[in-house]
Structure formats: C-alpha cells, structure tokens
Length: 323
Image (cartoon, rainbow, N blue to C red; front, side, top):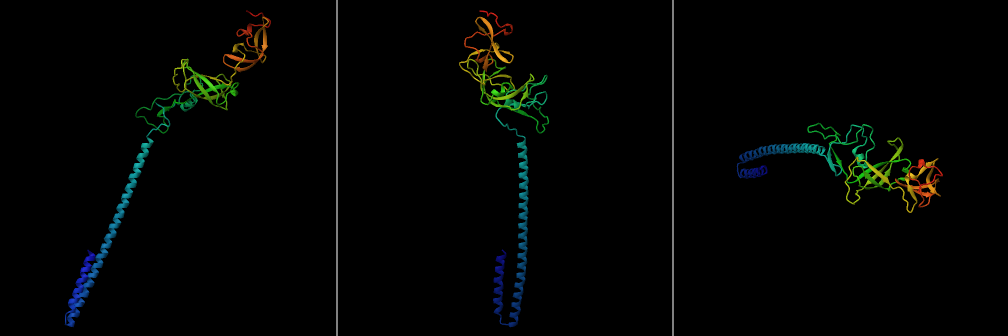
C-alpha cells in the first residue's frame, strides 16, 4: 500500500508541475512550482516517517514471534523433561524378571543360620549342613499391602528349575579321583525309587570342614531328569532337597571282587580271611576299584575262592572252616 501510494503521489506531482508550466506569468509559475516542490518534500518526509514506523512495527512483530517461539521451545522442553521423569518413574516401578521361572512372593530369608542365598541353592542344588537349631534358607513372607518398600527390599523370588545343579561334599581321601566330566547317580530322599543322572561340572580347590570334623571338598554337578525303575518320569526336584550322590570315578570289568565287609585292615595292610585246605588263613590282598558294596581284588585271591564276609573278628588263623 505504501509503494502504491508513493507511485500515485509522484504521478500527481508530475501532473502539477506540467500544469504550472503552462502558465504564462513567470511570477505565478514560479510560485506554483515552489509550492509543488514543497508539497512533494512534505509528502516524502511523511512517507519516510511512515516507512520507519512500519519497519519498527515489523521488527517488533519479529521480536514478538521470536519470543513466542522461544517460549514454545521452553514449554516443549519442560514437557519433554516432565515426560522423561514420569517415564523414568514408571520404569523404576516396573519389575522385570532376569529369567523365566516360577514367581514366589518374598525374598531370601535373612534370619536364622542359613548362609546360602537362593541363587546359591539354584546353582549348587543343595544347602550346606546347618548348625544345630538353625533354619535352612527359604523365603520371607511377601511384603504386605501398603507397607513401605525401601531400595533393595526383596519383593519376589523367580525360581527357574529347568536346569538344576547339585553340590556334594567328597572326602579328601577320594577327591583326587573326581574330575569334571565324571558321571554320577543321584537319589533324592523325597523321591524314593527314582534315579537321576548327573555330571561333575567343577571341583572346588579350597576345602571345607565336614560335619564329622574332617576335611572335604565341594563337588558341583549338573542334574538331569530322573526316572523310576519302570522308566516312568520322576518328579522335578526342588532347590534345597537332600540327596545321595554315587560318583563313578573308576570302572573295572572281568575283575575278581569280594564284598566290602570281607576286607580287613591289619597293620596298614588290606587282608581277607580266606579258606585254604579247609582252614582259615589271613591273606594279604591288593585292592583296586572300590564300590559301595564290593571291592576289586587285583592280587592275592583267585576267582571262586571262599572268604569270610562277616564276623572276621571271631576268626583265628588255623581254625577249621565251616562247610
């Protein structure tokens, strides 16, 4: 609009000068031309002032726009920060299990004499012997509704029994025969008649004091699914159950064996009471693979030879053997 008005004013001033130029009286012509010039100067001054005012208004509008944009950006930042804070709060209040399993409310018990956590039980498969009057590790009651929960308060326990472990204590006299990969047979007190195969995963280097006061070493095994004698599936063990482990550290075939009760240690020498020529004789023997019920004899006896398997303390050399 300003440019259009300036153009129209310039045309009007040109027309006024043309009209004044047609006047024959020199004095009057000069006066009229001076008036036209003065009017044009006044218009240009007013137009310049209007242009300056317009520019000022434009600058103000631009500054106002920038202020509005800055305010919008600040509000957007505040809204984003508020959202991030709320999202962090939701994230902090969201419980996610590190592994799949069965949820049990509560956490590992802190009272009593139990020294192992539930995680140790899951990896070991058995709790160490507890002191007299002590309680085995378990779980506390769940946090009651409305109770205050501080950082680190156990809310629930995730139990994964898809892969169970087992720990067994082996006496120092036998631990050198145990190494990773050795197979074993496990029997649970809670599953009578069921047998579970296991494999040694690791053997501790440092000893522990056994319940009987001797030195033993903890052996850790991986436990597999078990079966009953009729090949039906055995139940899945629960963490902390007691078990008996039979480690197969050595194996012998086509061997001469005697019942373990027949071996008598005399003056540091393994012996048996054998029947020779109808009388009892103490025979030194060399033993090999030792099982729970039978012992391999590698030297000193022949297959089929009669030996005393009970009441050896009542036998004397030279006594006549009963038929």
